[in-house]
Amino acid sequence: MSLEVVKQRSRGFICVNAHPAGCRENVRQQIRTITSGSRRADAGPKNVIVVGSSTGYGLASRIAAAWGSGARTLGIFFERSPEGRKTATAGYYNNVALHEFAKADGLFAASINGDAFTDDVKRSAVQIVRQQMSPVDLVIYSLAAPKRTDPASGEVHNSVLKPIGEAYSSKSIDLSTGKVIHVTIPPADEKEIADTVAVMGGDDWRLWMELLLKEGLLAEGAQTIAYSYIGPELTWPIYRAGTVGRAKEDLERTARELNSLLKSNVGGEALISINKAVVTQASAAIPVVPLYMSTLLRVMGMKGVDEEPIDQMRRLFADYLTDGRKGALDSEGRIRLDDREMRPEIQSDVAARWAQLETENLATLADFEGYTRRFRNLFGFDVPGVNYEEPVEIDVGW
Image 1 (tube, rainbow, N blue to C red):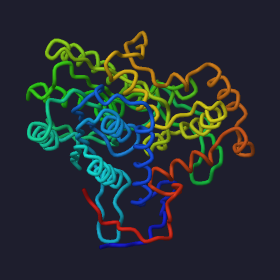
Image 2 (cartoon, rainbow, N blue to C red):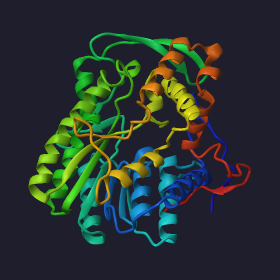
Image 3 (cartoon, rainbow, N blue to C red):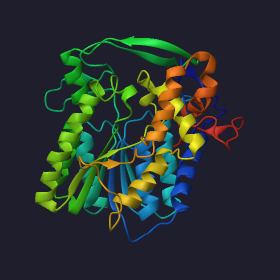
Image 4 (cartoon, rainbow, N blue to C red):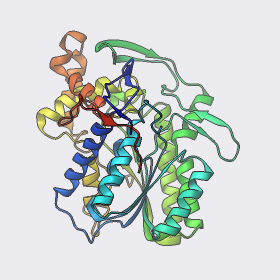
């Protein structure tokens, strides 16, 4: 037993520890969101792999699959386990909780804690599917990582968050002080662009799907979906038109190639889902985006149309991944779960507020307090219903 009173510790804006009870409550609430809605137990995927299932959209995807359609799930993530008095990462505790709730509800759940880019993890996944699951009918690719070692060449690629072509200047926010600042980000060079595509593009997704197909582990009609983002024009220089956007273009090219491959072999399909901007550890690292997110939270909250990752995944599974697809694809063949964020009236309000934003009116025009609260929630802190004065077991596993 390793009972500890866990208090939030931060380095700058980033939490360096996590609260197991808070993470457990986060997972419980997401399960409740799925089970409280209308469900069809006979519809939806039944054997699901989620590559990148620690937090955010990946975790929400796994919960939606398991509790929405009774799917057997294999989650793959790369998280730090507890060590002595040092807590595990939030993603680790999230999946411990998921296993606990799945066992209680009679659902099959398997997990691999390791680097999804490696051949060893892919082989382990193949073994689990072959021995404990049935051919997979859905593969979710939701991986967010800062670097990747190429399994063939051994070369290490590090992603960067930079514009392409010329420097980019804009408003941003100092996450430690809450002050609106102005930043200038230098453009990426060609190597940085190529490295970012190698980490965040479609190459690893392709390797996963080719391996599963080769091993005969894809069911007839199998689907695979990778998550992406477009966002408004004000973030395009650092996002859609920057290094990350170049990687997302590669991801979309890969989707078209995989779609042809799956269609000809198992009658399946590969899709890109353009999701809404949400508070995640990864998005907090992108300059400009946290300030945009704070403004978006205020506007969407006022209009009653805001969504968390689990709300988005409930829509994805209900409208696109059950029999009789109800949701329409856009002209590029993509799922658009960002439809509410990108409504003209939402974006015009955000743009008007953005033009006026300064530190002095931040609390009125944006919701930075809500942004920071959601960020703390990711690590299991400031979660309603959790007693943070009570000692908790930190050395747990599944």
